[in-house]
Structure formats: structure tokens, C-alpha cells
Image 1 (cartoon, rainbow, N blue to C red):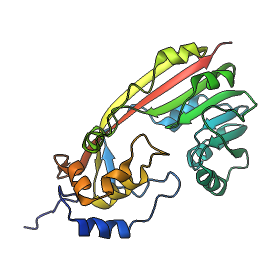
Image 2 (cartoon, helix red, strand yellow; image 1 turned 60 degrees about the vertical axis):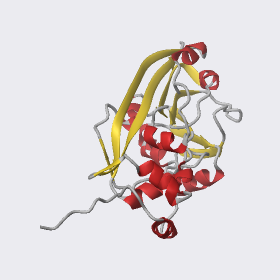
Image 3 (cartoon, helix red, strand yellow; image 1 turned 90 degrees about the vertical axis):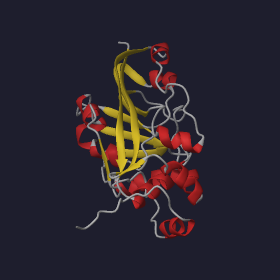
Length: 254
């Protein structure tokens, strides 16, 4: 009988971590497709939800567009789109990767200070929110759709790194205070399994303070730090953590 060794162990020596890091290709844009993961079913898919609110006549603002790939997947469902992001490197990639002539990408952040237009639809996925700014940039009756990383996301990693969760990332009172009507507020928290150590090291190294709610690079700063995270969180499937997300849909007054 051939024994199957686990794709992730609970301990690694420093030499093996160094070898993994030396062979790791850095993240390009916001592409995590190389990762080998499985997770429980989720009640929604962000792109499908957004598509329900888009019309061919709509101009759409994407706040925190990143490398623009997700926004480009929606380009055929809208008239024109503006994607903003505070990271110049992400915007450079967006210009290269989107391939959609009706999309424009520009430097900007959640405050929307350089955005003069209003929009019938504003979208945001895993990026900073400023509800008053969103309220000021929606046309009457317009919609905002956002998916946010929840405060309990990757709870075992946070605990091992001593990076405690903050308060709830979605507070309905802030939404209504911005003059918006809350149409939907959904939440899921599902098991998320990283199947091999290469995927795990890549994932942790890609989660930097600029683009994520957790500094994953601290987990691979040493084998001791990595092993602290792995301890008690590995089974025959791989490294077991969780994925916590919120989805909010709100509408401006008419």
C-alpha cells in the first residue's frame, strides 16, 4: 500500500521555507488563480450579483478596481466604466490586462476627491469604503454594491500573528447616514482549505498591508512564525482556515 503524505505539514525547517520563498513567483496584480484551494459553497458570487444591477446604458464606477480584471469581465454589460485605485502598479496592470475600450482607469481612493461625475451604479470589492463619498456620487435611485472581507476572516492566522480583528466592517447606521437605503446585507463564514504548502506560502506572501486586511508576510518571515500558524490547523486536506465575507446593496434616494 502506498501511503499518501499530507500536502501541508505542521512544521517546516527554515531551510525548506527559504527554498520555497526562493522559488516563489510574486503575485501579479490580484491574481490568485495559481492557488490550489477548496472551500464550502457560498451563497453568492460577487460578479453575478453586480451583473443583475447593470444596464447597457449605465456608467459605472469601480472603487478599488485593482488590476481591473473583474471590472473588465463586466464591461459588456455597461456603457462606460471608470476604475480607480490608489496603487499605481495595479493601474498599470489594469491598462494592460483589461482589453475593454469602454473602461478607463485612474488613480484615486475611497474619498473620490478627483471624481467629478455621478453614477447610476458604484461597485466595490474588498476595498476601502467612504459611505458619504459614495452617497454624493450616486445619481438619484442609483445603486451601490460592495463585497467586503469580514472581521473574522482567516481567524486562526490572525490569532497566531497577534493581529486581532477589529469591529464589524459593515455598519448599517453609516449607510443610512449617507442618505442611502439598505436593500440587502448578507454574510457568510465558510471553511477554506489551502491544499499545498506552495499555495499557502504564495498566499501569505501576497497579503500585504496595502491590499489586504492582514499582513500575511509576517507569517513567512521565519519558519517559527509559519509553524505557529500551522500548529493545530492542518489535516489530511491541507491548511484549514475560514473565509468571512459581507455583501451589501444600497440605493440612493430618488
